[in-house]
Amino acid sequence: MGKTMAEKIFQAHNGGKEVKTGEIVFANVDLVMGTDATVPLAIGEFEKIGKAVFDPAKVVLVQDHFVPARDTNTANLSNQMRQFARKHGITHHVEVGRGGICHHYVPDSGLCNPGDLIIGADSHTTTYGAFGALGTGVGSTDFAAAMATGRLWFKVPPAIKVVLTGKKKKYVQGKDIILKLISMIGVDGAAYKSLEFTGPSLKHLDMADRITICNMAVEAGAKAGIFEVDDVTADYFKKYHKKKDILRLKADADAEYVQEIPISISDLEPLVAEPYLPSKVKGVKELQEIAVDQVFIGSCTNGRMEDMRQAAKILSKRRVHPDVRLIVIPGTYAILEEMAEEGIMETFIAAGASVQSPTCGPCCGGHTGILGDDEVCLSTSNRNFVGRMGSPSSRVYLANPAVAAASAVAGKIIHPEDLCNE
Image 1 (cartoon, rainbow, N blue to C red):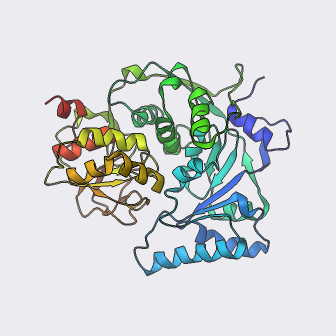
Image 2 (image 1 turned 45 degrees about the vertical axis):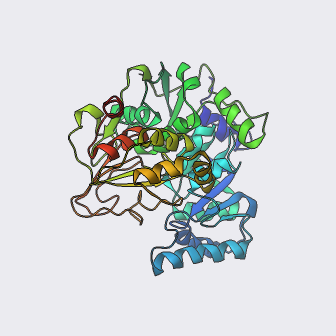
């Protein structure tokens, strides 16, 4: 019997020993990643173990959730992680102003490769599946154990095969593909399974699309979301990391899946997830009369340069509606620099947007865009749970950057074609 991509990765990290779905394995990890929001919780557990970090070059600590610090408490959390990094000689301790949001910084820094096994003290570590790696989120105790030993236990997940066919219409992005999938299987439809993406559409999906899809795989409960490694992946590694030879990870033709889900992306229109679940999805034209107080473009889900270009194209020579606050946050400082070089920063500012430095702030309700009572936000981020971005009575709708930019101008949820064809 052939193997899924998840089985191949676990077997490679289990000393090459045969592994099967459902088996418990102790696997070596390639990278252990944490942030200022989670590492301070793990430090106490790590110190109980009484060992040094297993490899200072394979532990990545990113200051991204509450930076610049919003108050004394978050400043102390950052300081705790900062002091830990210095004490253990962590090679990749990333300060505010020098990296960005962890899930963009890690791959763009060359720390994630096809076939890698990466754990992170953040649920959206599934993002690294866009690059053919198996990334998954863990709790603080497991994180501490992995920092000490470089190993962790896993149950090899069963896999769901998602076969993508067709070509995207204008204004349809990766966000719409993953919202469609979550609406089909629900927020627990892939619980402790790997979502493995394949099909003829992959050649039409850029890395930004794949990042969005794998980032939100966890919103369907998935242990991991993984794209097979193709020419699009190879082009990314060649362009950004000068790597010509990468592992062309694919599942075997006779691999066993628990479910196969076909999705024709040619049939998709821009979608919106209503409060308070990412699975509560409707077509954007069904929600077009909903006024918005705030629009957020960015996050680990949609903070890529491709996302910024898409939004800027719609905002060019237009102004944000007077009743709307538009917040734009790119994924990394490198993307911020690229925005400035291409004139995209100027476009956002001219439109009346507030452009911020890379942070997870508004997405997790941390800072830089907290919602007040009964306010409505259209966000390109990944979660719209009760109180996710502020007041429990606020409401968050999820959509792609094109819909978000158009809605910021219209003052209400709108299909981009209805704005751009005026």
